Length: 510
Ligand code: ADP
Ligand code: GLC
Image (cartoon, rainbow, N blue to C red; front, top):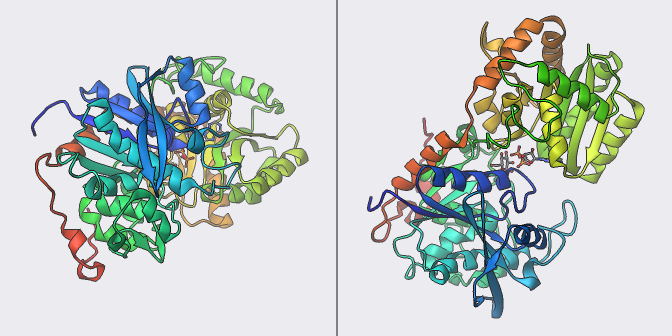
């Protein structure tokens, strides 16, 4: 290793606090900051969406003199390079009016993508690689996240290899279900050789697949939890890429996300009406009372306040909640508060549930940072019944706020929540297995039973949850180990690129 201080460029389609639609933004904003805190020079590149630019302008963005000119499929795009430093972290914002100056991030509405997303993110990926020459700052590692940056490792290898010969790439999978697959023609936007359009490289079941490109070409691949790194190698969770994940398992690791413990701290959280910590939980009761008032819930302290903060999509199991909770509400055992946005059909069904049970069910649709904090703090339990969950962050926030998570045993939820049923004096939440109403009702029965009849045991589980350390510091050290495993000299030799899938035996990592 030539240097102790690594230069690391994170390339992501969203990063907090400038633009966020989900947990990717939390990670892309927090991990580089944690890497800086342990002595590295980490920065982030994001697209200059209209909303991101507005946010950056409030913090004093500075612009490079000349634009970068990025060609894609015979069309030149002029990219303005804006830089803003927030809380010590440098963001490079790649602005291009015709591609990013729109109201939406990925599309004009929930679940609808812009038609030109292949072009938008091909240009973004190319521009993020060209940043190095523009800034005269050559990263040791480019760390690309999810399909929107999936072309970065392939471009580094096949397009920019001569310019960045010693730069290595890491690709993180936050959600393998979103692959950015599109018509094969889109390969031309990035300028790849047509011979790469084959199943070993960029083609996948007759389409060009940027997520696959990331897995195939990156020097190292990570998934956002240990269990998810295993799951994506199976047919059930691999979303057709399981064989690709198995083939490249030799360079795949799982690293559980951290959380921003300054932003999510019940002792100082500015969004809360009262504060608390493990030594004194009185403030939590005040948060619960205030939350009931804010959401118009009946003052019924005997019932368990159960929160949900989630994208409203099939992945998150919201339909299970809708199909299961009514008897518990009618029995006066549970009050439900949902904050979410996404699928309009799910919103509609939530709306009906809330209107059938005024004072017992409250739902707020849209994005609301303050309410998210107050729900996490004021609820007794947080529901995350996801069908799959690469990592999940809300259960980590919940644990820190003494709110017991009720989760499906999958992905990062399995890595971070231990059921209280494992034995006396253990556990920090509740887990269930198969996704069906029987198993979900049974976990609710167990959680509500403990809450209503065994307050001391409930409190002990709260304290265990609050004691778990999910800070980014330790996580950043794990990524540092991944970066340091790379050789920064010469060209790499990638055996998997030269062998057909059939010749590689799937091997589980232990
Ligand atoms: P995913 O990235 O799959 O949506 P995560 O649990 O990793 O799931 O991250 C979700 C992030 O988005 C968390 O920080 C959560 O608090 C936040 N979030 C989700 N929905 C909302 C909402 N409607 N309002 C505010 N924050 C939200
Ligand atoms: C994705 C996953 C979520 C994960 C987040 C951050 O959105 O769905 O489980 O926590 O990325 O890695």
